[in-house]
Image (cartoon, rainbow, N blue to C red):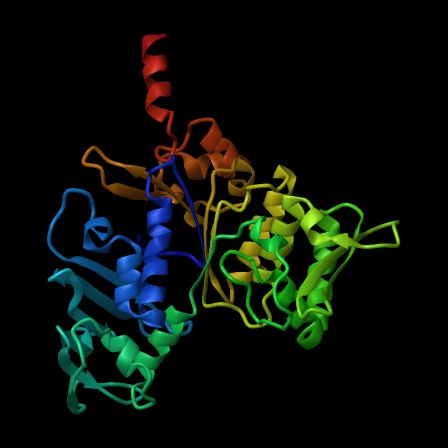
Length: 381
């Protein structure tokens, strides 16, 4: 997928690879935060990480910028397997700083041994330093990214470790956790009361902004509070107007808790470098989805946002270059096609059409599970 926009939305049939693509980010982030082996074991090892019925190593290549108008840096990682354990066969970092010449590799490792060029702006003529990791299971970016002498490697480690994938569960948000402020929502949302407590104590204006937006989306909602209990736990309460007494959050609707959680993510005082949200339409009223999509685009100036969706109401708010349709080809591999590259989409939208409507009417050339059936029916008519 080339030329990704700050907001990128994936649509496609069930089984087309949306969740797998999300888990690329999850796997890399977990491998840097907690180690390659746990992330590898969690996913069923190499057998499940590889494409079906394939063999050999797997590889990842990510091109990124640290800031706007800075050079593109390419991170490449190739993983193999030896004696039922993961092996980092090759890991490189390179960039192309000038307008001419070949890219310069400033970190290169194979099976735990390699070289790195330190400094703020590594150059071809700078001294290369040999290094050896304690194990071929270790990622050089994780190990060397903890040393201040390697600022470009540090930046990549912090970038990847900061990726956040949301797997919010309304059931988990209804829990009563131990009291104590927590800065960031967990992937499942089970610490929602703690984050509300943190925002009230440290960023009250931001919490008021979140609750004001929430009250615009949830009729009659008046207030959300996190109240410590005598036994050390934390209780989330919600108050509706015109009633004077709040009720427990566990009696709130799934949609209310989901919307509150999404707004907390989107209005984070310390924006995440990358935010992934799977199927935000679940439990939300369709008319709320257009606004949610616009809010995702609004924060994409500071956070890169990836969303997967099955909702035409969410897709209606998108631009053609923000939407990618996924589908599997005849060999079983996922192909990603941008809506802006599909025939007639641009001309339809110039006439006032919206992407969600084009999708539901069968005008997108990928991402529709019934597209082939629809074509067959027309040809027989």
